[in-house]
Length: 389
Image (tube, rainbow, N blue to C red; front, side):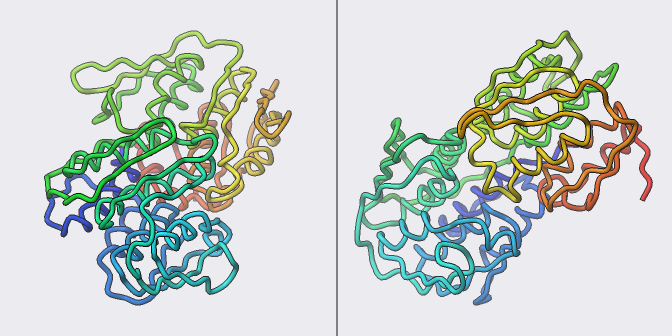
């Protein structure tokens, strides 16, 4: 059983809190990020520990600020290395009172409250993290003057912005999303029941299993063809890597087909797929030509460096031709076994796990999958993979 989408779950929890907590939310993700959000969004504690959950940290920063709460937000060592300055600057310009407690521009930070709206239009970079933009979009309706967001430069992960707009619409809020401008007037949220769909990011690992296995017939439940999620791009992307997905009777059936020799792909709108796709290309002797990987530097780890280190263990590599273009050099011969580090990153663990179809694999710190897919190893075991601990 695939987990529910944590991206949708976390947005629904923030919006429900802003709407007074009256909505019935069904099929919330069991991912640690969402369980944290569920607990922390209604916490009466003065200090809020978001651990390693990026959306939880960023969404709660905006939520606690605009709802005029006095909170200290902190997190794991890696969270304190992930920038939040762009969001804090935006909230300050709106009237938020926020003080950094450690390094300027990074958690931990003290939200002292909201002194009244100072501006109704702000500019924010679109090329760093869509989570900043989504955080501001969700609190915009409760601002007395509403909010216009002017997005500067290239906009990354745009499907996540569209996801936020769709969820706001479900809860009664009208948004006007243009190419580089988002306008959200002051409005009242309307409580409404909501069911979270399954997670396309989690599904991507099963596409990888299908691609790398000698034979495969995999059925995945509760995925929507017309999805909020940008990672539904895996359906189209994996056709190039030898997997066809067909929706039949509410299920997605995966089967093998011939793959291409090259893959040209822009990951701007789906960066969380990059690690999985890189591993599949490496094994299937597909030359990859990638763009849109810039945001991987500020994820749970520096995913570019992590990928380079671990791909080299199987004779592959990820080469930076320039700051916007990357080449995946595939392996010519896999070793019989290898041990892969996860760098405290759930997606590193799950991206390299499908190699078990071709070789013996050891994953260091496998428990990191709790962040987004707690039952991943159980699901692998259920389809016939043996584990030693």
